[in-house]
Image (tube, rainbow, N blue to C red; front, side, top):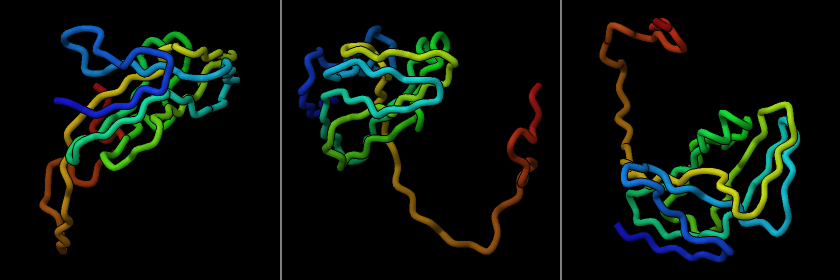
Length: 144
């Protein structure tokens, strides 16, 4: 699949690290370091602009290493980039740790996954079919 992209950053285009990778790393493209204090958030620019075909979305997801080792994650994970958006891809990062975290230009801050999606049409009804689970939610099926 071909996707149009404009790269106004000083970094290479995102790419798949391995043959089986689902996501491509996004890099910070910033003129000066950003220091995220605990519980602070910031929109970090990437310098990338894309044109997705209708029927596709780009999902901005956390990098597992940053989340596990540093407590840095994507606040609205997964962030959705719609096919009609033409602005710069920005990543909303949040620091969930107890220590400051410095973001430097070129640092891999998130990953981008391209996915198909469907458009739904609502069909209003009086009731829904019954299931064994019913209205149970929020852990109602247990943990083991």
